[in-house]
Image 1 (tube, rainbow, N blue to C red):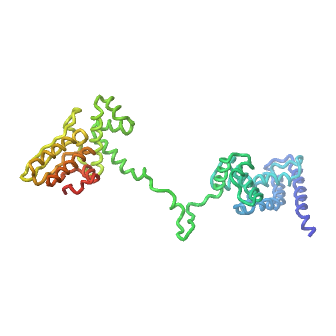
Image 2 (cartoon, rainbow, N blue to C red; image 1 turned 45 degrees about the vertical axis):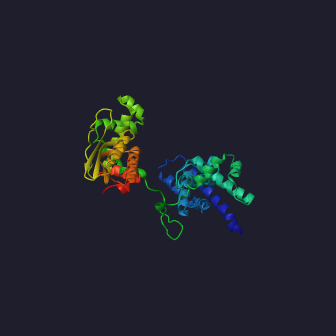
Image 3 (spheres, rainbow, N blue to C red; image 1 turned 135 degrees about the horizontal axis):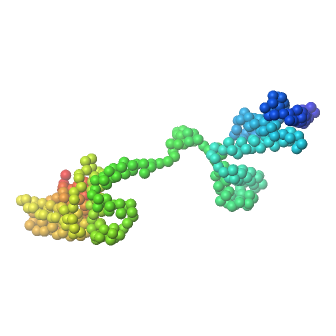
Length: 376
């Protein structure tokens, strides 16, 4: 028992003796000298168990013992190369060098995610404080108690606690708890709206090139330049209402072209001036009156459509067919005019149907509840 207890001190004394002899023998020799290298190997061999004991102190911290021993041996070589007998014993100097190398290894090599050194030290300090307060209070300490003990702000304590999770992050391929065993990576993230819109963006870009220069300029000023309709009108020298109509017509064409496999060519407006026209013609065909409509039905032209429908019912026909084949745009006011005509037809016992609609106009009428009156 006595021999076992005195052996460590005997080993340290023996290593110090070998170190002093090494320093005396290599004094004045070049680093590449064979004698110097042989003496260094002799000292390293003698101190290797000492380095292994220091490495074993750090077992159980998530690093394999073999890796720790390699780091300790690297520190031993640095201690041998920097040893100066005039500054003290070799074992004392080697212990500090090897321990520092081991701590540096844990600081720089074992963190799963790189974080600043200051946050590493703060995380270790907070972890140590949590352990102390838990033993003292017999419960988990609060953030305020940890901040008071460490002398930092509560926000810094929260950051330090989050930083501690970066030491050994969970693998994205690790199975989630439960029977499914689904990898964690399959549960992270969601649909990317920008990615799903790539096809639409590419399609719109190609369709914009098919618009006239004026319409492209209007769309660019409105949606890329964030200009108001009044600002656009003032710059182009037209009315704000005309800007609104031009934008509506261009957007309507883009919508129809997006929904069509073979988009039709852009048709220039029949009215080049700022004056907006709606062409309406009532054609009697026996007991049926066909109301042909062409243009854009908005709040300015909707009253004309309403009056035309009421006028077509004055002769008491059996049916009034509204042909919207020439209508590229209809807004809420236009839908209101159709509803007014529908109410009048019901009151007079006349059947009213809507046909020839383009895809966008047809969709708008269905959303407004007029799907039942749309002709196939």
